[in-house]
Length: 351
Image 1 (cartoon, helix red, strand yellow):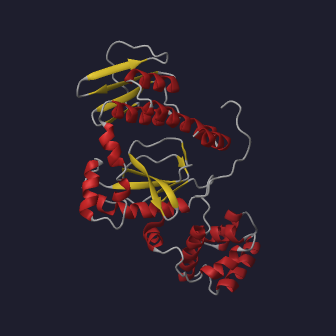
Image 2 (cartoon, one colour; image 1 turned 180 degrees about the vertical axis):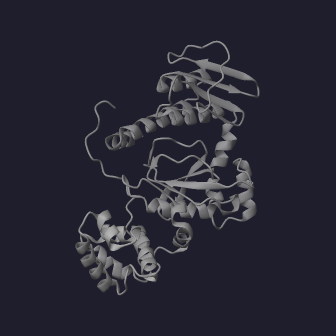
Image 3 (cartoon, rainbow, N blue to C red; image 1 turned 90 degrees about the vertical axis):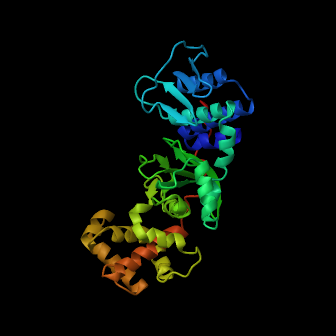
């Protein structure tokens, strides 16, 4: 973990801090520390009082950043607490939330639930998320898992997909796990359909579905993730591509795609990827030229070259759809979003 922290620190200090929060609570859980110690750690990390309460048996505690007990009851403000399984954890912060408040609360709640015997059973159920997202799993088994995960059989959800090195500026409180896929281990999260936008990079957001089709939402989330291009496009929502992303999710990776080989020749030009991208977005050559920042005659020359290579007019009728489909397939096959970013500098001395 320390080696990973060092590498992540060189990439993104905020990601490093989030990992330190996770590592801290992991150590506390392994150490089986008491409730006061868990709250002290949360308060120290957050820089404000932390508290918890549970329903059965009734119990509550508030702790300062110095680890001292704060007497009296407290009602946490909206958005400053998390609650699950009869256990509530909160931070008593004045003013706006800080960037790592969500991850601190998430890890504190998990640790408290394990400490008080509510979470160990549920944490085992978390490991069943992979079954819920498995296309081959029987529907009855998925229903059983969904019930254990407190997912409504009549509700609608989205699956989020992110690599393990993703940077989370706000972390949803939800069912999540690491799931094995043909593209490696993917961090999968299940959130309600109406969940607030996710601030993470990179992250793919799947189509909304019922519990029976969460496997499909997961597959569209992975396609959306592979279409991400940080830092310009850190998050891709599957809805943007409608039915097309469903077709891409069902397409075998090495399937023969008409027009893709020809498009490879276009993309070999230095101007290829940028030009095709603006052609997909624009309604005319002039608009595409503005988007690309080149004279329209220059872009027209490129369009003529593209037409000659791929054998059809990319701006005419079905030609636009053919180019768009081939372009998305090309992006998926050439996606590097799941590659661990290389270190870009030395370790921060402050960490």
